[in-house]
Image (cartoon, rainbow, N blue to C red):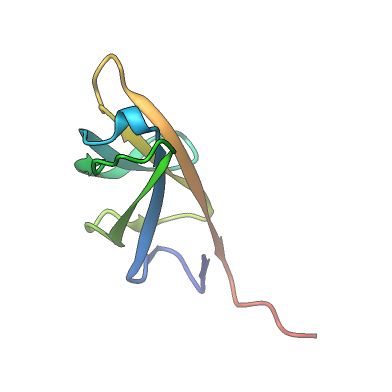
Length: 116
């Protein structure tokens, strides 16, 4: 994400998460959290909800998609350039917490590059 100057905010967009589950996991509802983390590992903000894995009778892995509108709160303020991360977590805060994965967002400051 390029910013002409900092601090800046995130323009409205969507974060789409694809989760693959095994046939024995379908039909479950699991507490889910998406954490937005800075380079120092601090959680800047988070979204909590429920991941619903629909029932299936297919003997193969299923894909579930979750679309979250960003920004979900006023804490999406970038005070410095750097690498930020979204982590997808099941059973957050539980001893069986599971981080499914994440994605990075690079924030750079300055004018856009000039074409050749």
